[in-house]
Length: 180
Image 1 (cartoon, rainbow, N blue to C red):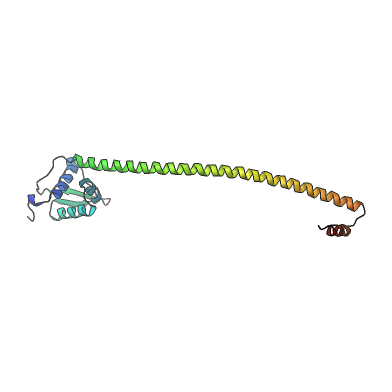
Image 2 (tube, rainbow, N blue to C red):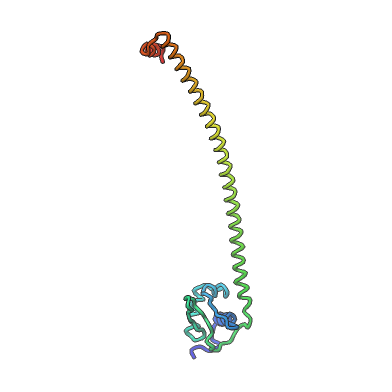
């Protein structure tokens, strides 16, 4: 035997207790290294190292299911457990996840508030542009109406000159002499 029951570190014993707790009543333990790390307050690399060492030392057995998920189980090799009840580790993970969701929720609500204010600002700008566009359209229509009236007046004046016997060439000369 390479390691005695008591020579396992406390963290490795906690990890074994955790796997034991999770596999009670015939359940399978699919927990990833990240999941184990969060539950035991380790880094993911440390959890990976501990899992691999416990597999190598014969405390854990690793298999892969049909979908490719890793399944960990105890081999039955004896060790001195630290805890009999591991429910608090799951509570710790759930609390951390709840805290993360609450933080995300606050952030997303802030973003929603910012985007709502931005949407309102854009709506107001759009309303101003629509009003400004309506004013410009009204001015263009007024100018087009005035231009049509001026064209009609010029046409009427040309007709009066032509009826008076002024030729188009004479009319052009009169316009040129008057500075137009």
